[in-house]
Image 1 (cartoon, rainbow, N blue to C red):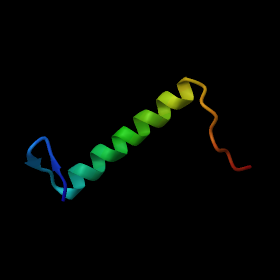
Image 2 (tube, rainbow, N blue to C red; image 1 turned 180 degrees about the vertical axis):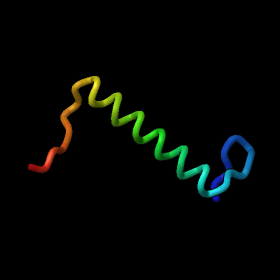
Image 3 (cartoon, rainbow, N blue to C red; image 1 turned 90 degrees about the vertical axis):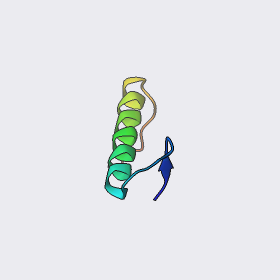
Amino acid sequence: MRVLGGLAAPDLDELRLELVLVLALHEEAERLGAPAQEAG
């Protein structure tokens, strides 16, 4: 369990936060026209 902002975050909350960040970054990358790895 990592310490975020001085508070111990439950694993589920941490995973959800990381997932939201990853999805947001992916969406922004697509918006900016970044080359995406597309298989097939």
